[in-house]
Length: 362
Ligand code: TRP
Ligand code: SF4
Image (cartoon, rainbow, N blue to C red; front, side, top):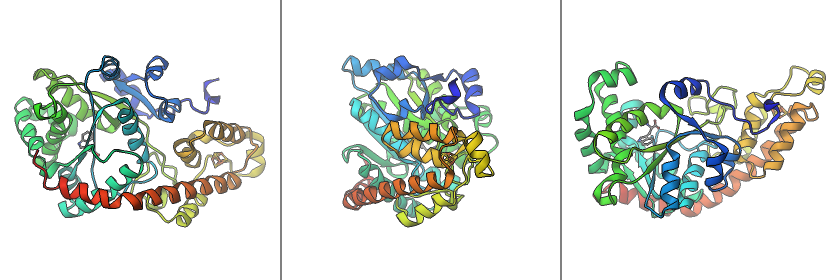
């Protein structure tokens, strides 16, 4: 039965609706065979896409292609953010030209966060990316200091009506709409002449970003550009059990810079998919599919057989949550220690990138 497969995907609720309405597709085994091997695909964490074939074809035919992603620097990266870096790595390994947008104008609009604060957090985010293996010569830029991105936002605004924006985002401040247009500029930037002109570009995102992808695909089609591809991932659950780890729930989140001892305590206090009593759990087994402790293993444990065994022991009632948590807490602490060591070493490089990018004018 499918539910006994530890890596059968937990599909976010809005997926089916989006797939039906807008033509997002599941990543099939055929596609996975063409992609570099990664736990993200093996474990169905990255589970859907649009036009990913276009990227693979470019790679196979030796044509240039790019990867771009953007993140609001409103948050220090947490253990769940690592999946974005790991996806970037997949495309880096395939030979993509790499772009990373620090969405500081969006953070200003959506989070009321100053550009100075964004700069500070971006440095931390970029240090995490470098420590996770993203190359220093990737193109990192700030929305606020990349002139072309803003120009593109202005120019493409010609094709965007008030009704389109309202339909996609609801009634919002103009700033919110401007951020959306800026994101269109981000996504189409790699196709500009100074970056080699039109080419396939892949945008790895969560489903929440799909409205931006649809808007951009629409615009790209009208301007003779290659319509961008995208991949969709499922987010790591918060330790409180809610759908997505985020900074609005600090007790549910483990930052990549978190003291490993504090992280362990958070894991020990986490919500689980366990039963109310040990007797029940022994008889009926736990439910890893709703369990954030299992999610930590699923996203961070490199060895598939460890994850598989935990799934089986949990569902068979052979392991209790206390023991499971202690083990996962240890693994997370070790991961954080090793990550933070690497992070320390690349901090000066991250600082330099921020210095350069915040006065960028290519
Ligand atoms: N809107 C994204 C967020 O909320 C950030 C973002 C800005 C982005 N520009 C992008 C994502 C371009 C993908 C591609 O985090
Ligand atoms: Fe979650 Fe582990 Fe408990 Fe299973 S045993 S429900 S995986 S904490």
